[in-house]
Length: 364
View 1 (cartoon, one colour):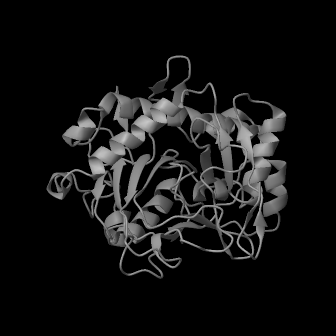
View 2: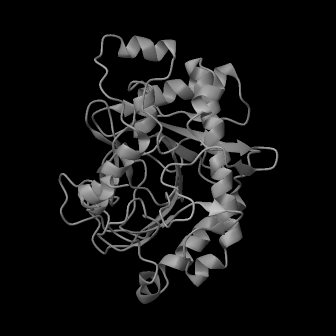
């Protein structure tokens, strides 16, 4: 599959990960080593078209509800890692170095679910779907664990070693085992990580190639699962030549699939753990042009929805390289300073994104 912007061509494969073997592990690893992104199919792993489409139906219903209702569930600011809840237009700033206005989108972040229950207040439209939301989050977690298993195969390291920083999941019962405390989650407090994020980009009457709908950024955690809808393009990644390249919702060969392949991208933490071997690629969302050259998908500035699942490790995990031979070769000769922890990195990125004071965030 090729994507061109007139400057370069990217080849982002679509990989079926229904089975786990050495070949798939190496194919998956090679894809994210080169670009930091890969499309995956996951037939038989629980995420079917009906489930995904229902999640988008829930998003539409919530974001189209009155502002005064959404306002009641606004994300608290200046509270360490309490970033669950609704964010209004221009409240999130994903590219704080170049953007002082904020991204023209709304969002709703979910914290963890415990025994099928959200650990945060929910508006009625979401409360009515709480069991389905919890189940979807659970399925995403299982898929993320599957991906880590395949990365371990590709890196030729012990699976248990790769999984050590993460909460343990019992795949036979699909229940989370309380062996490890996940990043940002503190039992008995309001401080929850937000692994499941829903975004809404409202329509605009003026389509333009320069309209930024989500600023340039890399993802903060270990890996991200991104769900998108056909006919709603806009995602671009920064290629090795520093050109912005669009990523299609339906890459060639998937046009007749029940739903678009899930787009997986590597976050900062997996990049740290692998000495930069796995790329945490900068990406953004733009308004599609009505006639931009090189675009595989075109459209106007219409409503756009996306759902992202962010997989985080335990909060005190040190970001040191995994003992893979490929990683050792990459980091050979580098000076090794103090290892940053997952919580330190996450705090810093959240402070920049939401405008929190660094001294307040660091207090956690």
